[in-house]
Image (tube, rainbow, N blue to C red; front, side, top):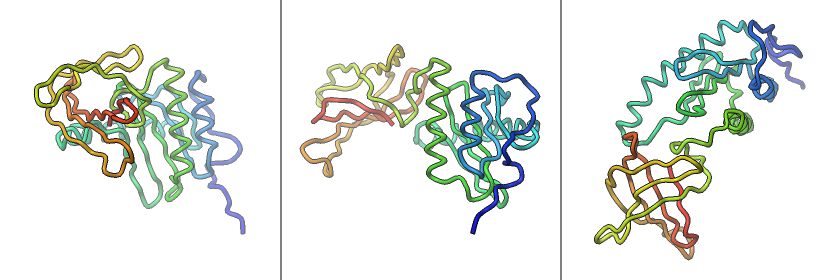
Length: 223
């Protein structure tokens, strides 16, 4: 038994109403990644469409992108208020469509619309690849709030009974001062031969972040 692709996902995407950009091939690869993908829209922090690749009316896709940015503006302060860090993404599962917003940076986000029930793990992995490619095109490193970070560098200071505490986070050319260390704890009972020394901190932009020092490997990471 074969499953026919939805009518909006034939061999040709909807005719564009704006010229292609360097982001178009990246969004097109996402649009063609799975039969269930209806639209891939790249928007700025105000919900304005930067580029897209869709199988529906471009206007409808752009409106969806703007609405999801509005939802993000409602969710993000509450996530921070719950001391859960920054909102990275969210998914809405609907009876007809699934919608996902994946933040790319402080200024941009990727919006993906699919038919209901098709936003599966392989597609989520492809979305991450596109996010990475968009950051490369923007010449931006992954933000410090993104839990999918590469290793980071952390400058430390002496700190009484703790021996040391983080003072500054460095990732590439980005330097993020730490204003306050709110707590410290250790983990590692399931890590053979090592442990994690964890710090909950406030950064310069008043974002909460957890920094963990891997004692065995002498490396830092964040979430």
